[in-house]
Every structure is written in structure tokens, then in C-alpha cells.
Image (cartoon, rainbow, N blue to C red; front, side):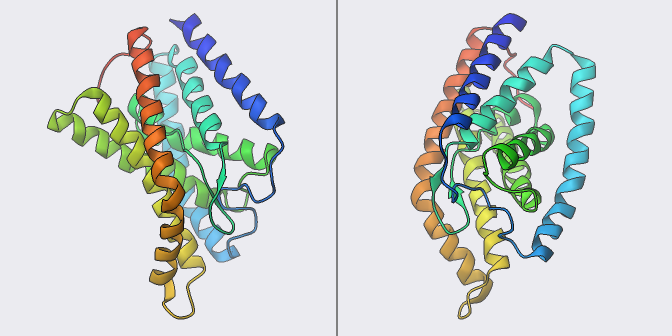
Length: 243
């Protein structure tokens, strides 16, 4: 099992390295460095830090209970890194891309994703000019907290209702992706309200533009997550379970 997981993790790492070697344009960002006003950048950091702390506590518990989970955690981190590095320019100061958080949410729960997400966002900000350090709190809240938490509850609800496992995986990954961009729209809307329609008008504007690219991306991410989850279960690398 460990050897198979290592091979999968190395494949993900190789893909990540290739992505770093591909030239990127400067507008390819989550929310770019310095784009948010200092007050909002600080506020999102303050909200994100407790979530990160809880994630670290949960991560330590998982690793101490079963050290074999380390490689699977690395695989989930690589999956998030690779998918979230695929960028499609969407609106000023941001972009659309998959998030990749659904797999980690299903396997480890939402709190761990805060840690995996901040590692991915930090590497992307430093190595890919994708996102930023001042906006890492905001990007972390949207991609590594709100999206995973909602995806987790969708996963729980789908299993409770009795949906097929592949449908539950698809819904979890797709909804987590869409919620990430809903939250990003809110973050941009409250920071840059419209002169005429205010915050609500600005949020609607950002959401309408994001949806043009994000809905098909979220569907594709859901399908890909189903394929990855299916391969992991067929190879007996994970136990079929619900949180």
C-alpha cells in the first residue's frame, strides 16, 4: 500500500514541477498580492488563523494514530497543488481554477484541508506568483475553509440520504469548488462595493463573471475526483467510509 501511494505522490509531484516550469502571466492569481485593502487582508488573516490551528491539531492526531496516513496526506496535498495551479483568467485581480480539496475532505475531514491549503497557497504565492502573502488569509478562507466545510456537509448529507458513493464524491468536490468562488465573490464584493448598488451589486457582478468559467470547471473537478477516489478504493489504498 505504501509503495503504491508513494508512486501516486511522486506522479503528482512531477506534475507540480512541470507546472512550475510553464511560463505564467502576471494576472494568473487567486486574489493577487496587495489587491485587497489592508483592513480586509488583516481581517481574513485573523479569521483564518484559528482554522489553521484546529487543522494542525487534527493533522497531528491523524498522524499519531496511523503514521501510514502521511503518504496519503501528501497525495491529497499534491492533488490540491496541481489542480489549483491550473488557472483560467476570470475577473480583475483573480482567476478561475479547480481547487482539488474534495478528495482530502472525503478522506480526512475539512479541518485538515486548512493545513494542506495553506501549504499549497504559500508555495504558489512564493514560486508561481499565484496569490500572495497578504491575501493568503482571504484565499485560505475561501479555498481551504469555507469550500471544504460545505463540501464535507454535502458529503455527509449525500451518504445519509443513501446516494451512490460516486455521486456523493462528485457532489462534494463540485460544491466545494463552487462555494470557494462564491466566498471569493463575497470577499471582493465587500472590499470593492459598487458606487450605485453597493456591496450586494458588487458581489452579484463578481459571481456572474466567475460562473461563466467556474461551473464547467467544478463539474470537471467533480468527475476527476470520482475517478481518483475510485482508483484508490479499487487498489485498497483507502477504506470506503463516511465521516
